Length: 150
Image (cartoon, rainbow, N blue to C red; front, top):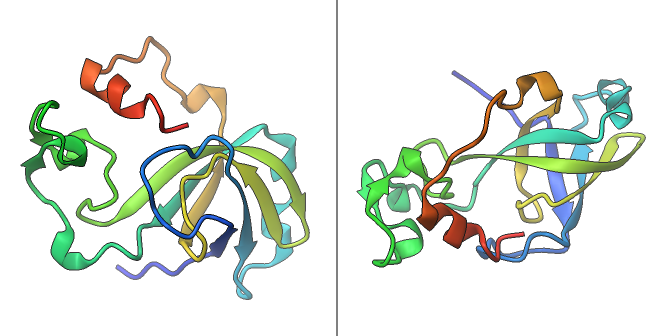
């Protein structure tokens, strides 16, 4: 399997710190191989899902088993697939962002938790029919972990 980035993130944030992403604004700039027409019509949507690579996570730090989220022993030891950590097996991240606009080959977004230079694998419009059709449940530790995230 070979996957190439379709774009790169351009943002002021340079470090992948865990919290306070709510005020972040970023540009997603298409690579030369992607024509600007690929973004046509995306600005008619309010949100997009961005799939990206945590490219600065060292392969040696990738977790395949279980651990305490953020290393916090107050939270239960859970499998890496039961958390959204950056040091996951394929280092793929996904976030739903607010679309601020499309300008040529650039998508402007808010609330993207990716740092400057991050490779983008895909951009998908958010359609309500793909969102959960029932209430979303999560454990208390996840709510606590996300308290300062946005």
